Image (cartoon, rainbow, N blue to C red):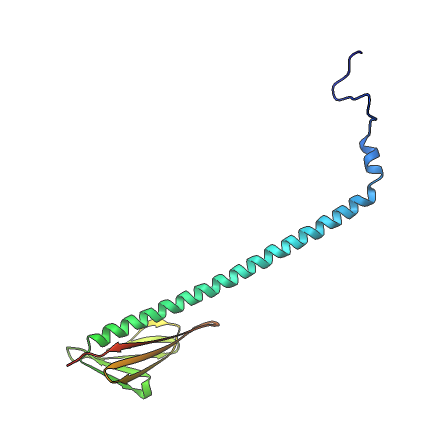
Length: 165
């Protein structure tokens, strides 16, 4: 038998790269176009997924901000009403006046998308407050808050028990 060089098989015919590519010139162009189309489809899908993720993230962020603003308004009003000697609703339910133990009167209202506390000067407490509506029934103060940021809207209603004398 003799020596056989490595990588050479005498029983198979030798096929060169020229012979392989000679028959497939048109197929290579079709393969290239198909792979480009597939790559473009995958890229379009990835971009659409990123856009949807960004939109939902923005909506969740806006909703969280509205919830936080509503909680701030609710906490401030409940603390003030619980410690108040007298509570009065004026301006058709748009303004709440609270008289504290020292006789100071504090007003609460919304204007220009902000919630304000006014004692001597007006101080903004929360933003994104579209409107506030107060009404007093029996020994409870009912509060309706409309919040808005961009397209996201939220309504919160709650009641505060007034101080008994």
